[in-house]
Length: 103
Image 1 (cartoon, rainbow, N blue to C red):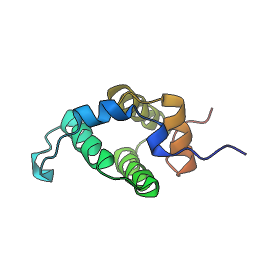
Image 2: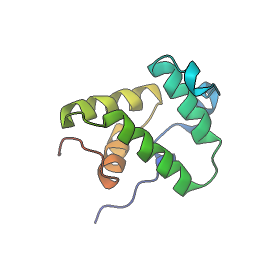
Image 3: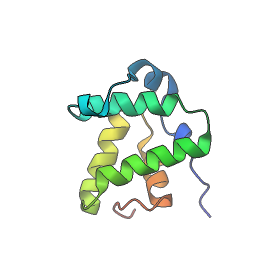
């Protein structure tokens, strides 16, 4: 049985604190703004289950109606920009029903 991965274990917390910025939803103009807003919300939340839900919801929204291959690309991009462990992010995604390639 695979050990449950928590969202907080995936990313470089200090990096998220540094890049996190608050903005109004209408002010989010692209991927970089979305990453910064997510980082702010994520690091402002102290509860592990809430952080897990935030990441799950965010990944579901990002991968909605996408192919498993595109889902993989999204995860790789998120891991790169948020200084995350891609393998842990992939495990987290699979454990939370996010559609990605097997393997």
